[in-house]
Image (cartoon, rainbow, N blue to C red; front, side, top):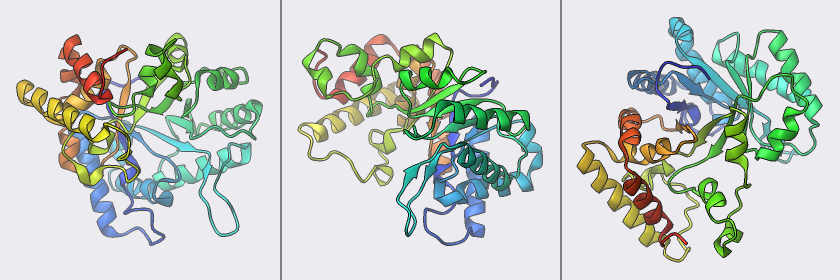
Length: 327
């Protein structure tokens, strides 16, 4: 996506007051205002959403910000994701990229966001029951209606993108994947070719190469590793692999190295963690998924730190996070 601001993207998953069934509160809207302002202050101009975040309340909270500050829409880009149906009584959770679901999901996102178009729509997860032609038909209808400008995907492999592209008359614009100093399978899938360690890496080989060859922008969700290395334990995931051999030691060593580099460079640990991603030549755009204004501000120097990070520093962080030397 063309953008004159930061390479960082704001992720709205923390807005809306949580995933409960209660209504949107005034406090939730205040949080959204503060988070958006913090993001704007560090140069972020792309705001990422999904129709399922907080059961739609994340988009609704952001939409209230736009309703109260309509001039913002001219200076920012909005993207949202559709294609996941959360479980409800009598209906199992499922992926749904049918034409009807894509069109209806987009219409609902536009209504909640108080906007007439999305700069990009992303298919949230692959739906094995959705033909590529049906996805293409939905996108074409939305584009012709002026409601969506570009199409992207999320959590798809290179081969899945190649298959979908055969039905599209415009190139896919982006692929959003979980990528961080903690989730390194996107990196190690290529490095561990012809090595026994490679058998344990599930990331589909060739995905980064497909994106690079076809000018598909890579966006990284989970880019801050949920605070694992930046001293924010309250934001860590509940499913941390605490039982994995050596994981705790590797986490501690990596956090210590991140802190050391932050002290040496006069920046925050968040800037180091994001800088490591930004240093990679794939031109990854990290999605900053926190509504905490202090933590958003802590990401401000990420591009500067990434540009100045040496090869030795980058590899030292990788090896520390692995908890063992490179093969």
